[in-house]
Length: 371
Picture 1 (cartoon, helix red, strand yellow):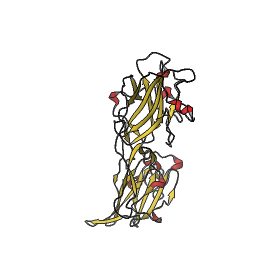
Picture 2 (cartoon, rainbow, N blue to C red):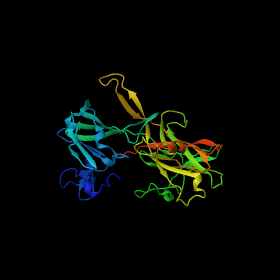
Picture 3 (spheres, rainbow, N blue to C red):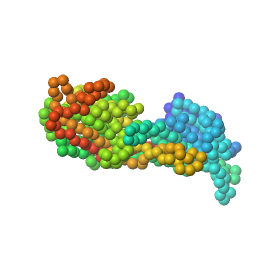
Picture 4 (cartoon, rainbow, N blue to C red):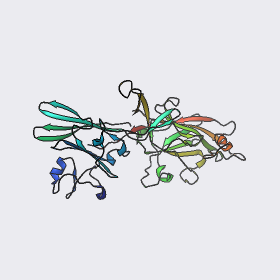
């Protein structure tokens, strides 16, 4: 509910002693005493030809980044006139910030577009982002002596869906669907990995920056001395593991060091959920979307790069192997170390099979506030 704003974050909307109906008429929320802005993007048009735009941090998930907001044109009048941890407030003349004026049947229509950019992280064979891209087309309509604010269109972005495939070694990659609702419970395997998605659950969706709980397990083996190892784990925008773009999640069994939101490896030593803990590997990564760079061919910004989300699904892949511990080698990756330890981290016992395993496709969604 966009009107669920905590008291300390409420910003008053409208004049003093405003009624509930008057408050709702200007697109705000009323709690019986106070008229305030809700967790959305609120557009208001005044009779003295001003456009007021109040943007809530929670208007998107992940939260919108206030410093990335822009309008059709930029000048000093387009900067926020008020800024809190939860809201950014803009107010400018309807003719400013690149607003386009049209007229039809005696109605003056002032139209502008608010959008937010996103940070792009680059890797050797792919580009990703964990930020949402947000666009809002808005209008002020002046009809005789009346004024009407209209939100015309909200730009909607990508969407997720996950898991499981068998290899000749009988290795399965699956996603856990347990709920981690307590702060800091990212490693609470007993909660999160208490259940897993099955075929009937698909399509499964994930939000940008939301945690994706992955388990790779070895099937039909009962030897407790066998250890399942992970080499490289990565994601692609298609089911083909060799397609581009790609993004690494693990390299040599360790979190990919060039990702600002590094993958978290989970320990199997403390779990009581499985009979053979060494036959399982678990890790968590933050959901992302692939992006595609485009070169602007013409105009004043010719040659510049712009980035856009690839409206596609993501598939997860892992190279796996079975290892038998030997004297001086315990089959565990040597993360955060250098030299011979790193080289040894990808080693498997002689003669053991290796196999690549893939998930089903994960659909990425970017929930928006209903405006």
